[in-house]
Structures are given as structure tokens and as C-alpha cells.
Image (cartoon, rainbow, N blue to C red; front, side, top):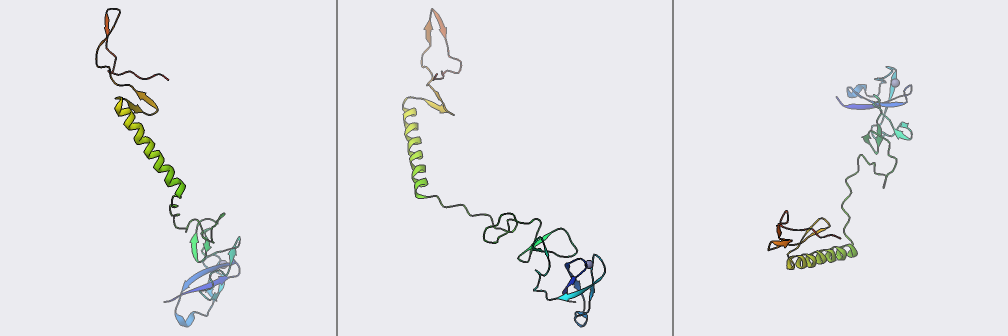
Amino acid sequence: MPLYEYYCRHCDGVFEYFRPIRDAALPAPCPQCHQEGQRIMSTFTAFTMRDGYPRRLPDKGTYWHLGREVKRLATRMRHYEHPELAEPEPQPMPTKGELKEKEERKRAAEEEKRYLDRWGMEKVGDRLLLPAPKQRRKTGGRTIITPQGRAESQD
Ligand SMILES: [Zn+2]
């Protein structure tokens, strides 16, 4: 049996109803108020509106946006696209300036690494770790061994 669409004047809503073709033109019972609804053309889905949006029965509190069901009204739309239906936005292509900046950052990082390697230093976060002393230091006749074998720079 085909599906037909009907309009209930009482509820001001559109509902669907399965019935034989020969009965299509007859009024159909509204699922909400059981009063008779008049048949409408199924392409005419935007027949009745809620806050300016098409509404259907049984009323689930949803809205219809360009023939598709959505939970909430769109407050902001780009190009009439409802946020619930919108495709995820593609990642914007990096601009020429951004690419250049990235390249420069990379080069600076490489240069810094070369410098640190040369002096046996290590960078942890924004702290610079000095190389581990190779020999024991003598202070006042006592031998001090640094805790982790390396000292942190103070700045
Ligand atoms: Zn009704």
C-alpha cells in the first residue's frame, strides 16, 4: 500500500497514512486528534509550519529543514544549510604565509638542536639542561657528585 500525506486542520500538522490507492483521496484519521485530515500532495511537505518551519504529525517536536528532519531550529546557517545536516567543514588550505612561517619555525628548531647537540645540552620544555660533568668536582676537600649527573641552568 502506498503512503499518502494528509493535513489536519485541527492540529495544523501533516501526517502520513498507508492506504490503498482507491482510498487515497478520502479523508484519513489524524494520529493526534483522530479528526479527519485532507490529502495533500506529498511533494508539498512544507505545507504547515512551526516557527516558520514545516511540522509533521505525530509531532515529535522536530522540525523539517528542506525536507529533512532536524531536532532544533537552526540559529545560524550558511547557505541555508542546517548545522545538524551540514557536512563537516573541510580543513582550510594553509596560506602561503602560514607555510613560510611553518618552514621558518622548523628551520629554527633544527638550528637550535644542532647548537644544543654541539654543547651536549638538552632542552626539556623551556628549560635547558647542561651536559653532565665528566669529572667529580672538589669543594673544600669533599667530593660532590651532582644528583642526576647533570645540572640545570638558572635563568
Ligand atoms: Zn489532528
